[in-house]
Length: 441
Image (cartoon, rainbow, N blue to C red; front, side, top):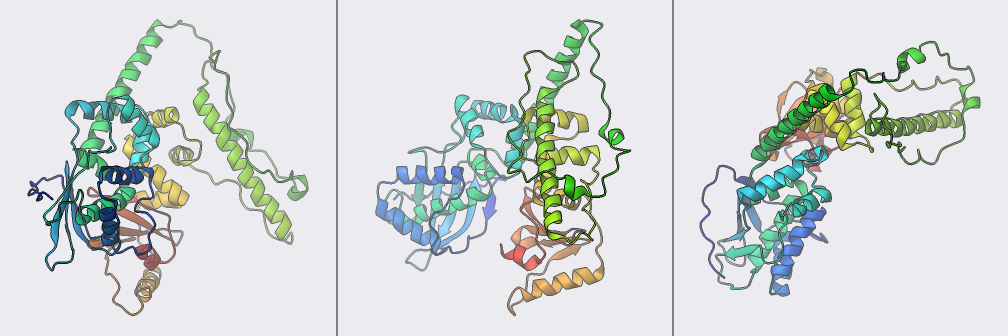
């Protein structure tokens, strides 16, 4: 096999520590884009036997630190000799025209941005990119493996092992694929923000022009009564359980409004989303009260109604739900005057921990010393007598620098995991009561 060329230094390069051994692991990818990477490798290979040996090397942890830079991935791979070999994989970098079309496709749908920030790559994004003439995912013969070993296989087992480990990295972070194609996360998100701002300005200008040309006496929007006022005088009956209907299997399909005749003051996508959310919340409340009626002795007070949220928190809750909508996302970005990336990050925090998760994202606080001491005991006991990792602590945040992990303690008594992405901490999973469990996950 041809010897690997020396990698040229690139400030955008990212380093990934050696991945731990994964004996018995069936596949090397759990995401659909990771599977596409593996498929491209296996279609490129001319020797299934070398691929099998590459999988074995990867599973036993033979691949060292991995460097990912535009167009080039490199690593040291330990083989049968004392000194490791230098293996690499080259992939074509997108040109400026392709990047413009790709970013336009992403920016056209705000939920694409939200998905990327959630470390997800929706299949719709790849499809939109292909429609724009850009192939983001690698295809047959686009991967060019190289190695310093004397084996002339294509790829050799060392380069194959590197490719399989890359699939595991891609599972966790689709921005690695964008970096391979030529641009780092910071550049991509800054460009998406610029496009989003330009698009919003164009929409505002178009709306102003339409308003100037519209009928000077448009129909008045239908009047309404705020829900808070409508329920202000309501008194719940003394025997609530007797008035409850039977259980509901599901909240039903979302409502679809007839938009053939526009109604002034009504935004159909937003109203459809609110109706679907109201149905889902009503079902959740009914389930709670039915469970209380079946299990309680009658002495317990019914649980409180849905907690009050301010407009911003409720908007984040809505967008984090099952029925989120691109149109509504764009409107809320404008109404709250926030950047799409910040709103998307708040959506992820809410999805993992609700209001408590959002608070942990945005508000540092100082927990009682006794609670932190208990957490340190849990952390120490989770290593079976071995020395536990030592965090850098500040208020409710413990940072494990070597692991690129931060744990944030919430007022609900749970620890929330965060991962560093290009110098920024972002929510990365559901919370837990034991910090040692989160470090080991």
